[in-house]
Image (tube, helix red, strand yellow):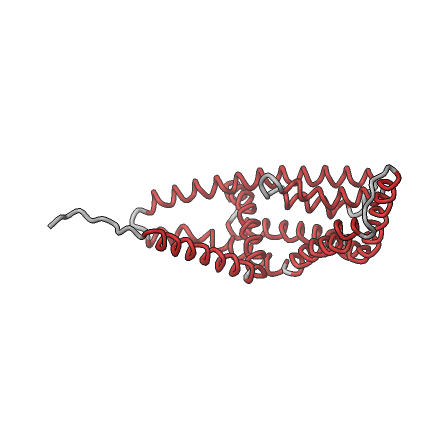
Length: 262
């Protein structure tokens, strides 16, 4: 009897079926993530803030502050910071929601002016064609969805804050729990600690750079007289965490408003 085992050739039909199963699984996963977005977004935001907060928490503990006092200080500073940022963003969200019809009309007027200018140099565009192509209403809806996203995040701020507190408390007791159940706790905990410190260091550096970027953008837009400069600075801060295209996407609303206000 031959001991060598060979995988059967599935053929084209089998490989096609496997591909369909993989694609169907991806669709299910994406649909599940979309359905759970209302839960996942606040949870991921809380995890992100908890990782950021772990650096000052560790720093305070290294300076001899008790764990409960370190968590209290970090938590209070985090809550005050989020309250200030939330109030500023909330005010901008309310203002831009009320101003959306005006911006839609300004964009429509700008498109009409561009069509008239093109007509003056011999480039004829069918009546209504440019409006249908650019669709100012869709642009206004994009701004509306963007603003609604910020509003939804602010609405879940209490859930995010409580989740951050829970994560900080549980993280402080996690090493003791793992030590009691792992076979080689010292090596495993050391590797886990190095990994978490690396992630925290990266996110802190990324957050600092994003904060500097968002602040500079907000100041620059404020000097240019662009409306809702703080909101676009906050958007630049968050979008800077998206690799490659985040900063580009964050610039789109500010550029459009600058053109409309010009």
